[in-house]
Image 1 (cartoon, rainbow, N blue to C red):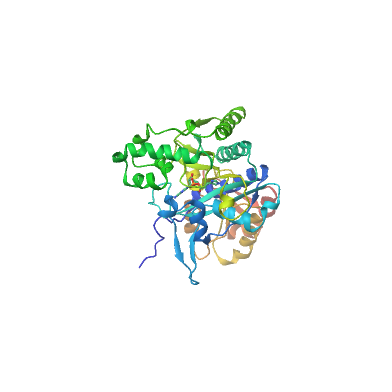
Image 2: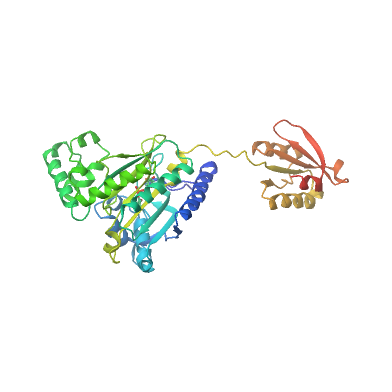
Amino acid sequence: MRCQSLRGMRDIIGEEAEKISSAEKCARKIFRSFNYEEVRLPIMEEASLFLRGIGDTSDIVEKQLYIFKDKGERTVALRPEGTASAVRCYIQNNLHNLPLTKIFYCGSMFRYERPQEGRYREFYQIGCEYFGNPHYSADVEIILLAHRILSECGAKKHKIFINSVGCRECRPGLSAAIAEYADKIKNGLCSDCQRRARKNPLRILDCKVDSAKLENFPESFSLICPNCLRSFNGVKNLLGELGVSAYLNPKLVRGLDYYTGTVFEITSELLGAQSTIAAGGRYDRLVEELGGKQTPAVGFALGAERLALASEPINNKIENKYFIIAEDENFLSHATKLGNALREKNIITEWPLLGRSFKSQLNCANKLNFDFVIIFSDEHFDKNEIIIKKMSDGTQKVLEINSFLENL
Ligand code: HAM
């Protein structure tokens, strides 16, 4: 029987893998300039961290969590996102002793979702969390940071949407108004939304089944408290002053229950149904809810596969690749020495495929898109010379090995 990867868990190969690695590299550089430090968080945690942190009525916990018992009968879960783990890390390592803590992470997350393009069961996130700053300027920093990473990593045509989902004081009123309106139109609600109306009314606004019904739902701006409204207007205005356009979307709520105040999503026109590349917001209660001191926090995460889908193909043609051909084993030592010398200069180089004919080695170089082949042959070897053949036009020249290396 042929082995297959699990549904929704993919091998990421070639250009896509390269795009994800270069996005991580580019993001690391930008995070550092915003004074964030890298953390590597465990892939598995006690399941209760996610049940408490993300909210047990969220789809992520109700339907998508990979949860199971380990050999010690502990109930554990694969992380569906990074924020809950980052908060656990913040509390466990006493990072609150610092005046502020800014951390970032890259890695795979797991959600048992229905796979389609841009939505997988294992996917990669690049994310960050900013602890200890209650001011809306921190919300702006996070949005700016997400926007900058997307722009520099080549995401085309992205748009920022912002909203406020209210705080401890005004959220109950916002939820009640939504529940009241949902009750009026309850026959038009899908079964999921009927359940949400009882358990978590705000989530109705995120319904993907029938968004037309959401048209006349109450809007957050008219229901949030003056403090939340002030912060929200502050975010909007400061972004404007920094030259970043953000669109207001009073129906924007998030799939995770920990948010308070500002929330945002960044979408790309180039993506299909799964158009959100990055998302985040403020969560001022989570640290306390997970057993730490009351600490304001804000963060975001972007989906690396979606970023790869929304960005231009990588232009790989900046470097020349060399394929060494040697017809028999007599050349092995010299050919591999030359190969090593090229590799030490970080030039992509392939050693001779001994055991294959000259023609077969040349075919390989061609199929693998090498720019040059280096040929070791009886005719030139005594003079310490090699033939360099340019694959694009077939031209070739004979060079002495040392002068070839010196002139690279
Ligand atoms: P999220 O919106 O659940 O937020 O995920 C962030 C991003 O991860 C999404 O915008 C999307 O690009 C990507 N993503 C999510 N699910 C999938 C999937 N199944 N397949 C591919 N990509 C996916 C969070 O995870 C929060 N922790 C963000 C945050 C950080 N909020 C505050 N701090």
